[in-house]
Length: 163
Image 1: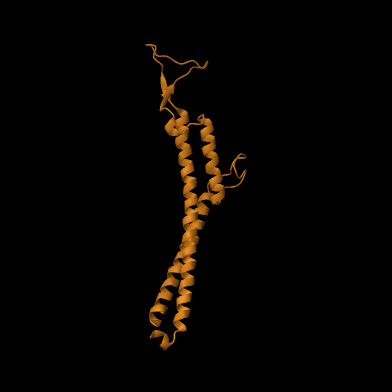
Image 2 (image 1 turned 180 degrees about the horizontal axis):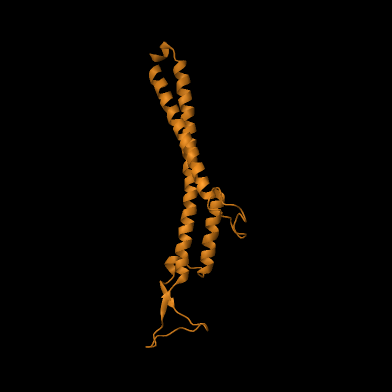
């Protein structure tokens, strides 16, 4: 039993060291990639005029992009908007073809939603990167603690404890 505890302790310690290293690397990797984009939240964001670096500023930026996209689309989401809308002239009147039918054009507000969705998704992936890396780091610390406890227990075992 003493050998089993000692071996388990070393394996848990090695696994813990690896998880701590990978967790720290993941946090640094996410931070570096977010930082190089030089994003600053707008003045009307929940965290105004801040450099986007961590999960809270990432969420603030994602939320304000969605809010602005909703404002630009009249409160409608991508799925609620038609793919095409009537083309209007400078006076705001519908443009008609030679047969008197309305000329249709792509709905630019819908296209803006696609861009907003891509940006929001990228920001959310940064948040997931931080959370996942933090979880791996935490599990690594728990594994290190477990390994230390097992090694300590294996040293203090007496032959009578084996019976």
